[in-house]
Image (cartoon, rainbow, N blue to C red; front, side, top):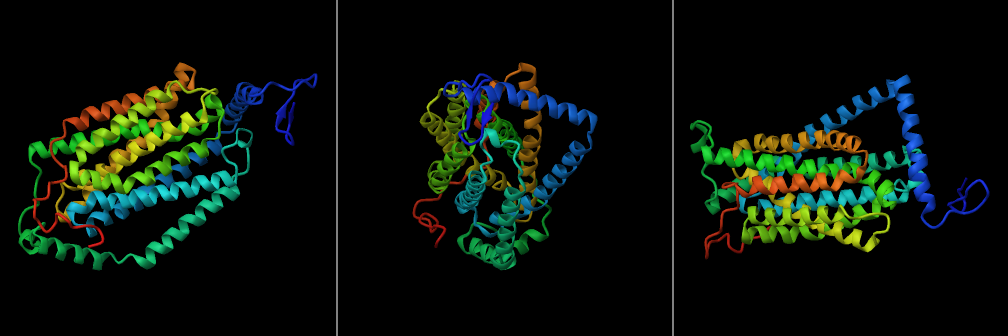
Length: 378
């Protein structure tokens, strides 16, 4: 018997379960029974599941439609040497948005084990309101054509780009074989690390309630906060040491965090959990800030949108595949504990493919060049 006022669980004789017993019984009995009931109802009436798939498909298509052009705005208005820093700002704002959503999750108590059957109307309405506000800010503040022209003029004055008029009559530049090989390896790395990363982000809420028996919102906020703190410094580090080396360092941090997370359980200190996810957040910032600029570095001015599409095709395909693939492995293994080994393996594979990349890194700035001390605010 569950007492909602005291949030305690009692057996039929009225004896209270020991500390942690409520979560254990809820996980082992209620969650399993609920899953069995959901499966039975889905088989007898598949309409709601089909409708959910349709709405999810429309959501993902909508995301793909706006995400690539929106992100492509950054290289369109930012000179090449500053694109890692520019991408750091993009990710900084994305992480800030993620923290807002996780904060709303804490307000609406979406992460509580007992609240998994709650009504999400209020939470979804709040999330949609945040998205609408962001859209209005974008519409009324972004001046794409003006900023792109200013970037092109600045690139010409700094000797970074050739005059567009000279390029119009020339056939579209093709990548050399080594450049093409690097592009494929970068995109393979993107797909591989999203296979690992998105498996954790899509399954961690359930993993936290069933295996760790903890609220997932606070843990993910720690990861997001660590990423936010790291974004700008990571952009500066990449400018000095190169994007590839910085990404490889991020893979080491990420795989270490996922490896040690394998050994977490309900008795693990929340402090250790926070430290591991903070390390994962720093690793994520290190990787994500520099990966997109490596792809667009291989493009010419008129191809930025196309190469942005390549990047998001690789990442979105992996994000669509990995929840199904990781879920299938969990079903076959009959445990969710395969989640972090799965993630660690794919991050390790991404390290290998990135290691062999030879092109797309930031070009070193010549000593004494006008770009040596050039910064975002200049």
